[in-house]
Picture 1: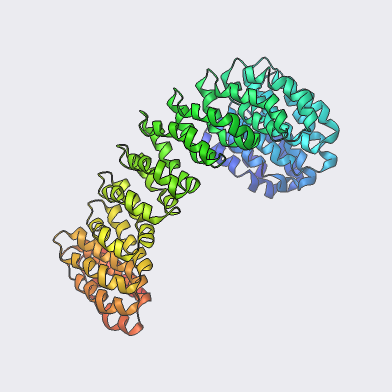
Picture 2: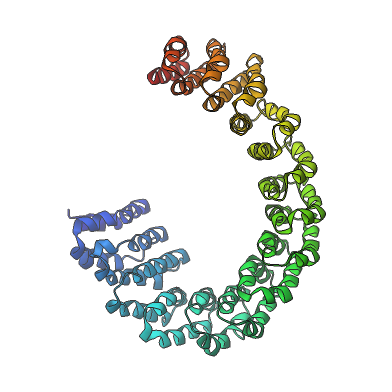
Length: 572
C-alpha cells in the first residue's frame, strides 16, 4: 500500500488511538510523499477529515502549524489554509478552534506578500460566517492580517467592529479578547474615531460580565497610545468602573491586571486615582478578588511613592494578615517580603517586621512556606534586622510539624549562614542542622545531608572538619539504621568539598567499617558511597583500601549489595 493509502486506512479506523497516532505521523507521510503530492493529495484528504474526535483534530491542527517545510516551503504555505480554516470554522470544541487559529497565524507569518491576500480572505470569510464558531475564530486572526495587509486595513477595521457589536455574547467576548492586540497596531486617531465608540458604551457596559472583564486589557492597550489628559478623559472612567463593577469576576480581572494598568496609565494617574482603587480591592468582599490583589502588592508598590505605600496600601495589607481565607494569606505571604527593598531598612523595621512575624506563625503551612521562600528579600535591607527579629521564628519553623515547611527552611540555611557568619551560626543553627539528619522523613534527611555540603562550601574545610564532620560521623553508632544511612549520605556529599586528605583520614575508615553492618541497606549504601569516593581519591588509596572493601561486598549474600559493589568495582 502507498503511504497515503495507509494513512487513509488508519484515519478510518474505529480506534481513536490509532487515528491519533496516524495524525502524529503525518509529517513522516508527507516527507515520503514529497511536497507536490502532499499539496495535491494529503492536504486535500485532511481538509475532508474534520468530523473526527476532538483529540484527533487537536493533534491535526497542531501538526499543520509546523507543516510549511513539507508542502515545499513558504512559497506554498497558503496550501495549508483550507484544512485549518475548515477546523476553525466548524469544529465545536473550543480548544481545537484555538489551536487551528494559532496554526493559521503561524502559517500566515511566512506566507510571501504576493500571496498574503489568501490569508486575508480566510479572515474575512470566517468573520462573515453564519455560525458563532466561525466568527470567534476570525477574531484571533485580525491582528496578523491587519499588520501585513495595508490595502485591506479599512475593511478589516469595519469588519472587526461589527464583531464587537454581534448579538451573540461569545462572539463579543472573542472580539473583546483580541481587541487589545488590534488596538496596538492602530493610530491614535483611528482609536478615537472607531474604537472608543464601541469600547466605552458597548463592551465596557456589556450585559455579560464575561465580556466586561476583558475590557481591562483593552484599557491598558489604549492607554499606551494616549496622553495623560486623554487617558483621564477616555480610559480612566472605564478602568474605575471595572474596579467597582457589581460582578466579582470583573473586579478580579482588574486586580489581576492592576500592575499593567498602572504602568499604561502612568505615574500621575496611578498616584491620584489607582492607589485608592487598589486599596479598595485589598478590602473587597470576595476572597478571590483579595487574593488577586494580594499577589500584586509588591508589583504595584514598586510603581508608587513610599509615603503612599505606608499611608494607603499597608493598612489594607495589615487586614489581610488575619484574613479568613488561607488563600488570601498565602498570596500575601508570597509578595509581602518584596516590600522590604522598596521601603528600605528603617521603614521595614517600623511597618513590616510585625507582619512578617504574624505570617511566619500562620496555622496554614503554605503561608509559612511562602514567607520562607522570600527570605533573601529581607537580607537585602540588613542582616542584623533578620537576626534580631526573624531568626527566632525561623528556628521555631525548623521544627514545624509539616515536613514541607522544615524542608523549605533547610534550603535557606546556607543563605542564612553566609549572612550571619560562623559564630552566630554555630551558636544558633548548628545543632538544628544535625537534628535534621535524624528526621523521620527521608526527604528531610536527604536535604540535610546536602545542606551540610553547602555549609562546608560557605564556611570552609577547616570549619567542617572541626564542627560538623565529627558530629555527623558519630551517628554511625546509632541503633536505628536510618541514622547510619544518613551518615553515608553525608560522607558522599562532604567528600566532594573537603578534599582528599580529610576524606582519607577521617571519613573513609568509617565507610569501610560500615561494609560489615548487619543491615543489607547499609551495606549496599556503603558500596554506593565508595563508588562516589573512587574518582575523588588517589589511585593507590582506591586499590589498597576501597577495592578490597568492595570485593568483600561483592561476595555478599544479598543481591542488591552484590549489584552495587559490582558497579563500584567497574569504576575502580
